[in-house]
Length: 200
Image 1 (cartoon, rainbow, N blue to C red):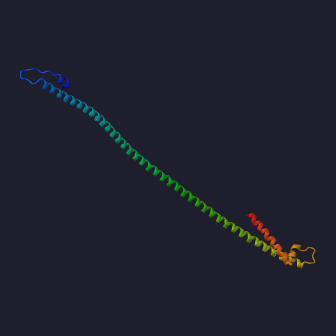
Image 2: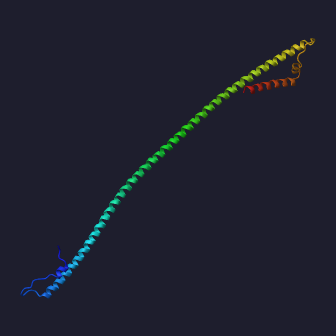
């Protein structure tokens, strides 16, 4: 156990002949005691400072570990965020491409449907034109035949003036009067057009 300043100061020495002077010994003891006391105080302060430094070192080591863990976590989080962002971007691009493809396909289908309907309308139009043309030709042939018959009947009526039966007034008028004949032809044409309208 280390000696204390008090022990140094109160230490008694045996006296002998021709020994040291007691006053000098006491003075030296006081100096040594003061020096030891100062060293003890400094040692205690150094121990306290050392303990404080150790605590700070432990704190900084813990802080360093915490910072390191935080950096690792931040890096990991950044990588995960980057990966998630890339996946989300790829998903958005895929969805956009899918929608665009759907729109293109739908537009192509509509265009094909419109083209088909137009083709059907053109075919139907051609068929109607052919039917109307055929009907007009038929009506024209019938009109010519009727006009030819009217002409024969008028001629026959002129050869039988003395008989009781006389040709119809309308036929005779048509044959004799050019205006009446034209009016009769117009009525026949209108009847044919009305028939065409009903067929359509």
